[in-house]
Structure formats: structure tokens, C-alpha cells
Length: 195
Image 1: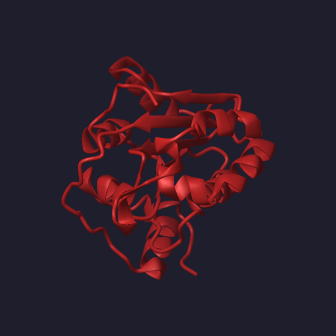
Image 2: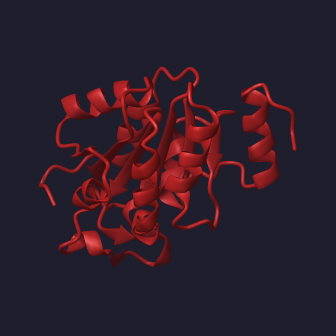
């Protein structure tokens, strides 16, 4: 892991700043609190208890809405549980999908045990090995700004970005937890009827 560590809430706020049509899927736990702390939005879909599925939910949205940028914000623990999904993401490679992993090297929701990224596991290398050509680790404010710009504007393929973050716990900012409400709110924002 690199020595540079970002503060998670300012980093997420930077990724979401100036959003217009961006759809956001946030992974279990702290990433959902971070997205909510940046401001609840009708185009946010918070996952509750769906550990390991954030990247694939994002993939589904990106394929269903190919002209709309989709940003997945998740943690290293959640991504480790869903590593197989990266191969499927790479196979489809939608240009409107960005997957951002906030990597603190801990399983924050289960007591702060070290995750595999505290050891030899390099999520950027895993994503690249699955076939995601644009897989990066963000190491500077300039790179974070470039990632934010890219997340809001579809490109030639999926972007995977690992952001090393400070492991200090922060207060929970709880967003809406009703899955049906969140689904219908996002559908409405996209001009679709509720299901």
C-alpha cells in the first residue's frame, strides 16, 4: 500500500461535487455513510446488507443506462467479497462505469479487523488482472480531481480506482434504508415509472 492516505469524507465529496446526472451506488457500511454525508440525492442507491454486490449493481445500472455515468463507491472489505464481479465488469467494459474502492485495510463493519489489503492483496492489480485496463491507485489530489472528472463523463471503458484512506472511524450519517423507496426514487429520477 502507498503511504498517501486521503480523508474519506472529503475524498468522496470531491468525487460527487458538481454532479448532474451521475448515478451513485454505495457499498455496505462506511461508503454509504460517506456518500450520505456528501448529501442525500435522488440518484443515490445505498446498499444495505448486500456485501459483495456493489460493483455488479453498478454494472447493471451502467448497462441499462449507457448514456448516464455510474459511480460505485465501496470499501476494500466489500470489494474483496465481490472480486469475481470484476471479471464480469471487464468482460462488458461499459465506458460509463467507474468503480472506486475506499481502501482503509480494515473490515470496518465487523470490528476493524485487518482486511487482505493490509497484506499482499493489491486490488488495482486484481482489477487489471481481470481485464480492466484503466485500473489505478489514486496517490495525489491531482489524480483525485482527474478521477472525479472522469467519473462524471463516460469514456472508452470502465475505470477502477483504489483510494487509500485514513482508517480512523467517523460518525455514521445514515441515509434512507428502505430498498423499495431507494429503487423507486432512482427510477423516478431517470424518468421511469415505479415498480
